[in-house]
Length: 240
Length: 192
Image (cartoon, rainbow over all chains, first blue to last red; front, top):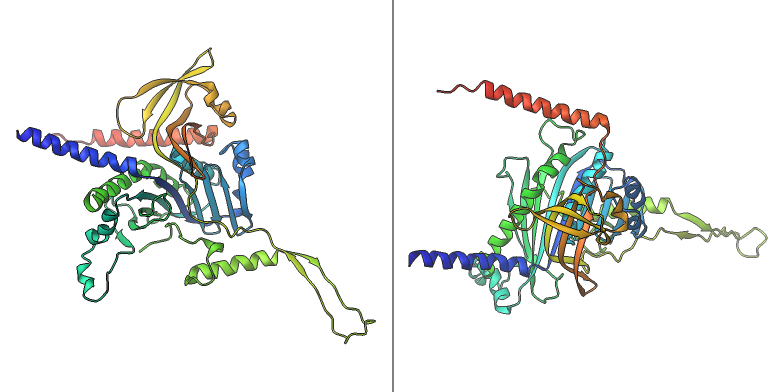
């Protein structure tokens, strides 16, 4: 009897978890690097010439701007923006999450001498909430809004940000979770769970020996696991 | 608290002037200035000294400013969701226009599987990678393009720069060195 109770609880939990995966509408993954860049190098035809993307992909690029201080373009499956101090590469297409990482590794395998100081793996999940009641209750589930009712009329939570400044895994960096409303989905009511998994250059490193790219490569899968755990935990604890 | 690698909500040139974002505005101004310095002087007119007008030099200049789109928005119109994803390693190229691959499930853990794919599923850009041992990513899910949903299968080959012989030798040397270190550790274990 007890076993069947625990079994039904486990089944209920499995159903809850699988529900988030099915409800998640837009999952954007982005890699942001800080360092010392020469934006004008990283253009579609350079990437194609180095076989990091295909020729047809490069030909179809939507180039917004190419300038010595700023390069910005889009290809079917990714968006790239480079300034002298920051590079951002992002996709909202799940089949291309791994190729995104490969592209960064490829670029900095070729530009070995580029000093890099930090990397952030960003996971942004946009989740529609169908039930109006669920959405309205969400703020109160996260924060005790009754505390603010004394001073404000009908207080609402606009944004929640939680940060881990000393990483649990002991690596230099931080983990930031930001939860806010989303206007990206087809639903009028949606939330965005934005997780920034940030890694700094290890102490006594100069950033020219591939340290940051190694960090990206080694922690890529763990970052996804962590993002999945955080989002599913939030979903089951505060939304359902 | 670090926010260097967080996505900016409003990026660079797109920051509205009324937004209170000092860092963004300063950068924006700097980029605009640099672009302005590079613009091409198209038209210049001078009112000559024979004119009956008061002798004031007048210049008319037109600038062509490189097109920097201000329409970019972080709103995502095109995305692919609810994807099942695998990493494939090609094990065999078949004579009937197909290839066989060992698949490792990225979405949920489980045993590896083997599947056969039609060569026509490989895009033209990736055909040169259709060789035994090469790695590809396979995903099945829903692609949304400007609101229209397409059920799709996407196959993309892994592209990483080829290492030179020297780089391969260095990596082997690093592995050898790591193995030696492990061996030293094992040798120094004292069992009670």
